[in-house]
Length: 272
Image 1 (tube, rainbow, N blue to C red):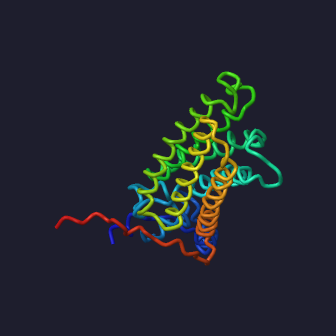
Image 2 (cartoon, rainbow, N blue to C red):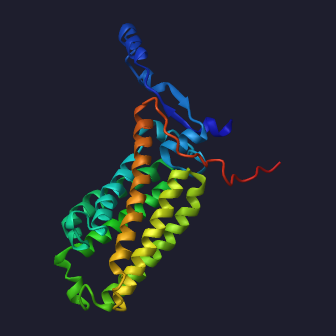
């Protein structure tokens, strides 16, 4: 019961607006904004991807919109086209990512940072951390893709050992933090868990690809990159499903898609 009371959000009732107009009660706070509904932990987790479905104290969630769909959409609009490049759709290659560098800055970077900061304001620590860190990832990736930075000429070229070993080691730590997020997501829902599983495999395959390039082992490179693209696409598929769930939930569409609620998984035992 305590969890339900803490997960409070606002519902606007149009009949109360008519009442205000008829009675002239327009001073002070809007009556329609004073009506609230209680969300169960499962419902709160569906809307905010907050582990355990526990809302932070305070009423900020009633004052601001839900930033979670923005964060998920920003991530997807960068990852989905990049996964297609890895699989060489339409004759594209990883070099084609240069064209998308603007999206990595202004959609992936800025979009994820804005949503992450808003999640932090609302007290949703886990989605805030995920969005802000991956916002940094896309900003970094966009910076690497910029020809003006001349990173390849500063080392030994895009196929040289120094450049590719640096990328492999960098992505190794992204694989580690993704694994940490995977463990934390076990208290959200199954779709979010699958997203992190597929993303973890994607990073592992990209590490293997850059590691092989650094050691001049290119026999299976194309297959590795295609596999990385396939798992990145599966990651995006889970994300698109979550985005649909979030948008439907935020707009009040009476059609709840299943996500496999895990808000009660690994719940700490209450002390007697």
